[in-house]
Image (tube, rainbow, N blue to C red):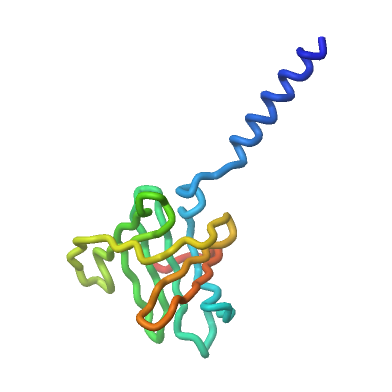
Length: 143
């Protein structure tokens, strides 16, 4: 009798764990807005930082890019994870209505943290390693 009570409980627990765990694909496919660079908080309307950008990652491995760096820019292309899903790579096929020759995807974004509410990446520059934090963008993207 006790076994009949315990088995459904165990099945519900297993089902609950499987439902809550999201894949990296589920987590990354979102509209992400840049919110911090090396710990410095920025907003879409900051005047002291000229990085105001939004990435929209789609499940078919395409992305859209929008920025407000003094002028409005937009682009699109393809994205992918590297083999062990620790880095993101991009290749722009179009930027500001200019068609680009997308030959090779370079995986330059190191994924440091990925949750439903935060994408924290590191990018190695010429002189240093910078960290960027993106949060879900809730506004409409102008196309």
